Length: 217
Image (cartoon, rainbow, N blue to C red):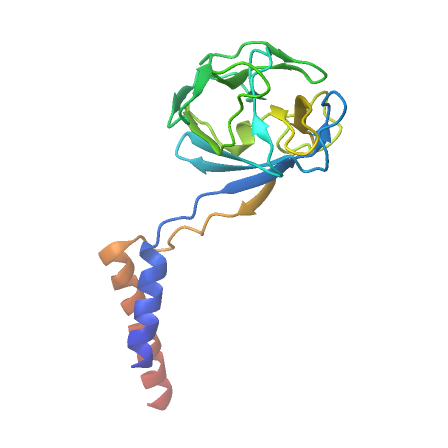
């Protein structure tokens, strides 16, 4: 019974898919006119897939994502300036360019990519969450500019145009201290998956039985 349980456990490990790598962060630097209240203002989660990155931005403290005239409501950068395809974009937002551009956000410099809330004006924001996926060859979490360098970069890696639910002020806030990995991939199987993995597991068990028989003899 113990050997069967071991085989079942090893088989499950052998065929289980890898968990997606995810990184999270918060928008905490306040560049709003008059201040946007207590940080953090929003949180972000980015999940790596096969040549893809899935973004989810959740607003905090009653804040909303707005369009106050900047070319992007949410701006970000990618290493290598790939051509990307957007999919699954939350209704009410538009992708701003599929190739690297130069989209200025006051106080934070220029960003290469972004999405824009379609309704202009501080009183017409989106409570979110803002979700979308970008796809390009070789895309990974490491593609996010300054992802591995943390604070002290030339400009923030991401910026968000918001309306504060606490102060009623508007302006951009940023994620300038980098993203933190929260989930690491499960190691791949050592002897394949499916039936080959099961045979490998049973082979290990059989080898153990043979060695014990030899020692008794």
